[in-house]
Length: 566
Image (cartoon, rainbow, N blue to C red; front, side, top):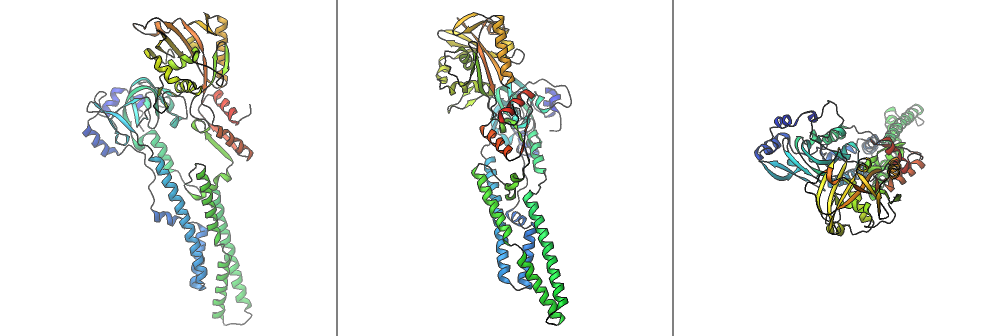
């Protein structure tokens, strides 16, 4: 996307694309633009025909040498059996290579076709659902939690909208979005809060945006373009085989020339020169054919094919045979953190309540007001199959209840929400009012420092008392302790009221609260990643973690993974 739409206001962007926020574009105009811009899909490299792939197998120097040897064996030395054997070996090598490459391509295509998402757009003033491939610049797209952003959008509406952009930035924490025009010419992608980018995930809230780029013109399209244009380099094995082929060729030619010259000079049987030259030439050719290792390419191909099968058994697809041996020559492994070394899924690790910091594994029940607040002050949607949909931080809180084998669904059904004060980035809090035992419970969660300003009481082992300065100090100390462990900390508070509010606002709902506890979450490391790093270190391979996280967070994750010593 060449133009910087994040610094252009909404009216200017809509005018540029001939669109309207309330009506979008017409269906007829959408069809014209689809013809003009093409489908909203990423273009891959041009597919090579089976014949072209087959011919690629003969570009190896060793294969060329074998073909020359086969021709010389048959035509010059009249050794048609040897020539046939060499050709069979060469053809077998080529067929194995083509079959493996075709199987890998088929597997990759199957992965691409697993899902074809659709999107809701506003056309002719009505909201309709269309395949994401039919979206065009100027379309007004509607977003809500759970949606995949289908194209690059300049946001028109952002109601508590949060989007996870880990696919582009590597950051697992969703970005809070806004429709405000940004000032500046070179704003980093992760800071463009008024933009939504293709292939990212909406985790919270809702929004609307006008499409400013589709297909290969999107940010993810730029990444695909760089991948398509990347030069292919030979693997160490292929380089070594090429060097071996050259060395053998030069040595064999040199030896043949020496044998030919010595035979002509010595001429022990004093043959006529013409006959002698022919005999010595045939002798030299026979020596060359005998010296060439015809079985080497086939043996290498078979071994590599077995290697790709082993990789496939471990859920790894290898497109080209020689690539399977690359790991054996690896000195350094540099890996992204989010989703690769970590699970890209927030998980509760610590819970502070009753003045004590507990591990997530400790017992807790639904009489605990910290847990009650986690579940009630939460916008997570629980799907029929138990899948949790929403902001990763909020889904982690609900999942914590499920991990404790608690009847979360029944609890939420028994205590329905009647009012709410949505999250706001300025006050950093969200509140809900739920029915609770004939009364109404106000459940509040948010940043510890902001919430403590509104707390008047504290619940310790079921007993309420006015919160003291010492208790606030202890709470903040626990908050700091968890923050040093790279945990994201939220505070929980509540109060019980007799009836709902006539006008629920932060000024009346989020006042005189009872402190319930703190919860610390983290995107945990993958257990298999820790084992893989340890194995790499034992093999003498240096490991590097790439992340945009704060230094403290990165340090904590690196220590947990064993990348650095504690």
